[in-house]
Length: 391
Image (tube, rainbow, N blue to C red; front, side, top):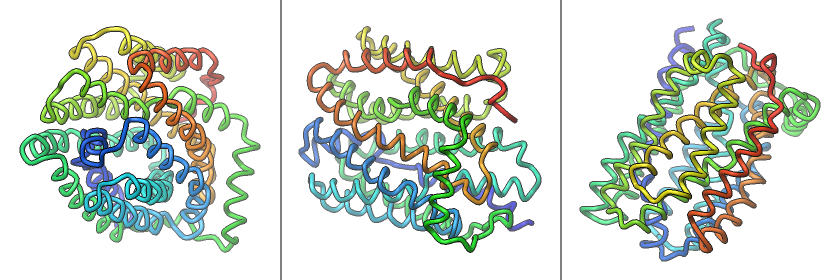
């Protein structure tokens, strides 16, 4: 029991080091200035990344369910290490292309596995009712890493050039890889004797037949669709406004560090808004309006406030939806079902990234407005009801 309990702090450490991307605040300048690729090609690379996610999501979810979440995380960390080495040694488009495919495979292996391992750990300890709180805190370690990485990356990029933050990123991803080997597979998750393909098909069928999961998935996907894409849009906006590389790092820390306060207080946020359903609605509404305002006003101060608000609220509702989804999924197919939903997201992202590449070369600010308007419409079409949100 003690070995399983140690998963909790080990997963926090893993999340911290796996997220300590020193290059994180400078991805777009690294691509465009070091790798000499265009903004459209940046979005093309991200589209390739999510196509890889789409192809690998369900197969890797089945690997986690059949062979163990620990193995899935070990393989994920190994491929992240491989991708970072490639990016750091050979910065050019076709190497980025290969690296994006490898990184997509790595994230597919990670997707759902860490959450499933945490949930099953708590279940074995008979503490699964604390998952919402624990998952919020677990996820906050990712943002602590962003908070730390920003100033370090800003100093390295402004003092020694953009290649140095990429080289520095190798260190934490190797540490994360090492931590994976010390994790313990919970007993509530048994490595079942069903075939790999049976595991995969069972997860897909379960999702297809579960109406509540589909409702929650629609809300998660439609409203969170642009969160990842906005990350790739705000850096060109900073470049357009002449912000120095050092302040890129400070900006990165601010917009991704503040959400820690939200993630560590998810239950309080729900009480503050009056109910779980109201929090999901108003967080989506505020996020939508933030994107629209980002494309309307030309102010760095306002831009930082709006981005902090957007990532904090959208991230919080994303974590809460994962919590509610887990309540409906049996342990033996948990990673596969979560990967099914991630696969749907990946398919949509592949298309939207390509569209974004075209739109931002046309008008970057108007792209924010368009995406905010779409999210606003999706907010009012959400079918989530209070009774769906089980604790």
